[in-house]
Amino acid sequence: MIIRLYITLALLVLLAAPCGGCAAAKECPFPPASVATPAIPDGFGVNIHFTEPKPGEMKMIAAAGVRWVRMDFKWDLTETAKGTYDFTPYEHLLSALKSSGLRALLILDYTNPLYDGGAPPRTEETRQAFARWAVAAAKHFDGHEIIWETWNEPNHQVFWRPRPNVNEYAALALAVGRAFRADAPNAKLIGPAVSEMDFAFLEGSFKKGVLSYWSAVSVHPYLRSDPENVTAEYCRLRDLIKSYAGDKDNKENRGNRGNREIAIISSEWGYSSGWPGMSEEKQGQMLARQWLINLANGIPLSIWYDWRDDGSDPNDPEHHFGMVSNAYHEGRDPVYDAKPAYLAAKTLATFFSGYRFEKRLVMGSIDDYVFVFRNGASLRYAAWTTATREHRIIVPLSPGQYTAVTHSGADAGLIMANQNGVPITLTRSPIYLR
Image (cartoon, rainbow, N blue to C red; front, top):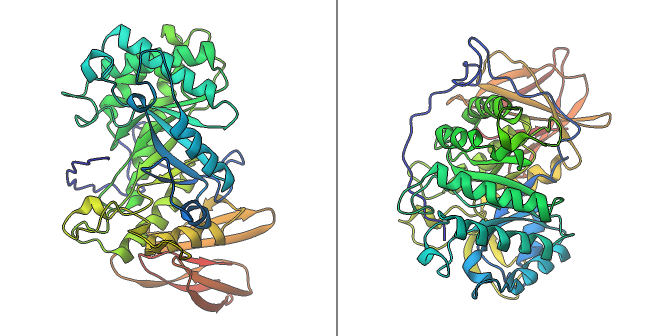
């Protein structure tokens, strides 16, 4: 369903390097830890591509520690006659999610042949029709605590034909935002779900006043490099949001409800195990590091792309983004074969369940990451490196015995702290300590 045209980028940004959008000479630190950030695993999710889950599928998703699913909420599927809405397919999906303790992030998309011949909403008539449909959906599913996202990757020509147009998208987002504020004021609305970190498109949208209506800005980082490189991008985006969220000269901000804190959501981001240089084992490593770095950056919701592989062609990278393999095994438990990415998600969610990111410990190299997580008086730790060579470090922790677990859930034994701390060997795969 989602066709991605990747461009390989040489991203040479280091954690401690100044960010392009921050003040001169300012580094890109993690934002202060906040108790408002959901405890693990309440902010973990996956993208799906169905409204009718197979038997046992939702159980397996929930068992991975996932608490959210992101799915297209299609206009043409639910309005087949002008002004008449049928949300039955999504009623089935929401019922299945609820029974498994899962919540939904639904994408308000795409075109509808009833309006403008199926072109993206670029006329006022079509924008208003889209907004009426979106509000009808929000009201119909009131009480399900859905997050509604306005469109998917409008900066990509696959999803906004014949070419992206930030002014057209912003006009649509404003129409939806005004309609929600008037008729569904309690519904949560986010956007713009840009492909990669497209700052020109983001700022173009912000200039039009869309932030007045959104509770969060959603992005799809899709780094082909180490996920830790996203820190500078998030820093730049936080600064950009702040500069426009409080813009009182923008008419869309008039009557805005105070100085709201607008979060950043990673609503789609994955690594294909079919990419050159990638493997299923490395994909699992990347999932763990992606979610860890998002937690450190105060990202309240991280949606992994994808739940299951879209196919089995070894030569098609698009087939291999999943946490689990493509083949369904009816009557078996589990119903899909877990890939290392699934084990990485389950281990992170289980090991740190109830914990929140507190801080990063300063080690001898900016390549070395040691994160501290807290749950009341209890502390747990994650450690890894982005360096190409593994090496040994001493983590300055309290004396005692520590249990180590690999990012995929294997027992890594007991480690005794000496007078200086805990000696561990860092690799590019995270290790967890308690």
